[in-house]
Image 1 (cartoon, rainbow, N blue to C red):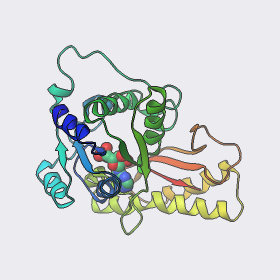
Image 2: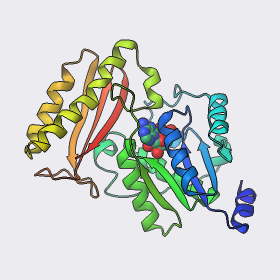
Image 3: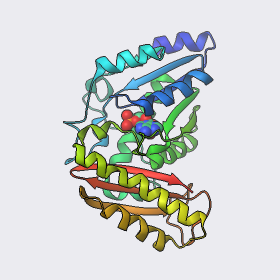
Image 4: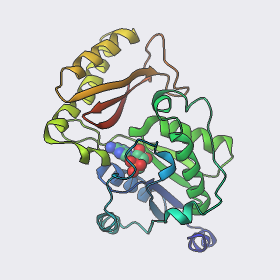
Length: 271
Ligand code: AMP
């Protein structure tokens, strides 16, 4: 991979990179299309990164379909699909990790303690291999995007990190590989997340700036759906610091994580 990259670099080709865990859907495709527009070469990685999963999380059952991923990448004219093995990424004796402080202790980080350490470590490794001029991440994983931007800035990495819009199904559900886990009824209940975020956004537009009021409205709408097991968090945060706000302002982010049945879904909206 590194020697292929060296050839591209020697011939002054710009490299756009889309890191994924595979089981590609329209959300991933939108990142690929963005990358195609802005770069000479587009590289997609598919790697289900074990070190970003907690002990009781879904690593073993995470959906995989590399054949379909290859087909989709071919259709989108991706130049290279990089699909390394676990033992290549983490050979015996692996000892180095990257931790972005502070930004990783809120929102999802509170409930998934080592998740972002795993994400930043694998993304740093992938950046060192692919040496992208631009890397594309979805705003669906808003905290991840902010954390990676911070890592790139702090470690003087030569990659521009670009955030792309959330791609949704017709009923507003944010596309996610994990939606595959949902039964028909759970899938219906999953639509509550975006509906609640839109409701809160409308209340904000009409003048409601108290985060507690907005959070209550979101909570009561979501809990009306039968397959909602638990709301893990609803937070309204500053888009850069990810700290909860006392008064809601334009540009703030409402982020939430909800268990629909056994499946943990996240979503967010920019105000
Ligand atoms: P994943 O394979 O879930 O790790 O996601 C790989 C990349 O695709 C990440 O940057 C995600 O934020 C992005 N992504 C996943 N779902 C969506 C979506 N519905 N809309 C936009 N980007 C997405």
